[in-house]
Amino acid sequence: MNLVEEIEKLKSTLPAHVKLVAISKTKPVELIREAYNSGHKIFGENKVQELVGKYEMLPKDTEWHMVGHLQTNKVKYITPFISMIHGVDNFKLLKVINKEAKKNNRIISCLLQIKIAKEDSKFGLTRNEVEQILESDEFDELSNVKILGLMGMASFSDDENIIRDEFRELVSIFKIIQQKYFATVPEFKELSMGMSTDYKIAIEEGSTMIRIGSLIFGERVYP
Ligand SMILES: *Cc1c(COP(=O)(O)O)cnc(C)c1O
Image (cartoon, rainbow, N blue to C red; front, side, top):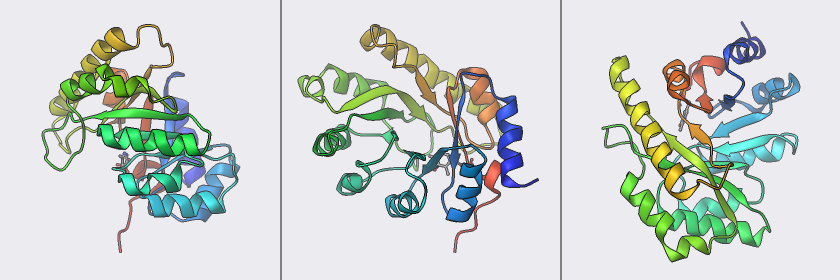
């Protein structure tokens, strides 16, 4: 099956409330254009330089999501065009996004990343840290970012129970945060969880956005 067929097949299995973010990192622009031409327009990247390069080469109505760890000094390169930043994992980053969004006269959609995996290599906030951010006076002044939900990455594991437990933890934090801080904000509804190997479990547990790379584009080859 080719890329377009893989995307069609995957989309045909998704519930209506689940959005596919096609993770195109390391993949050539021609392949992304093929998907774009077939009607899929939402792509995610995890490296700023690669993202900017691809943005410049593809049609301007492509919807770009930043899904990787984002350094504050690189925020300014993506704020003119980015549709959503999935991995906001510290307050300083959120403040920098706000500042750069303001310069561009934009309001940028963000997800707060929660650390659910037990692996040290994964980034993310604890529930307490999220609450501290949302309760701060500084947060109230951030007029150019919009928090639409949470994001998380499960452990890299063959044990389905570990993955499911971690997704459940994310869902439970999501519900608490939603009730406590966003009860009057219907747009706070996104749960970005699930990748090629665990997206089915993620959807069963309540995901609204899956970030799928290798399943549709094939394995990544790193030089
Ligand atoms: C690479 C990446 C994905 C996609 O991974 P696959 O296993 O190829 O589906 C999803 N989310 C993030 C944050 C990534 O960096």
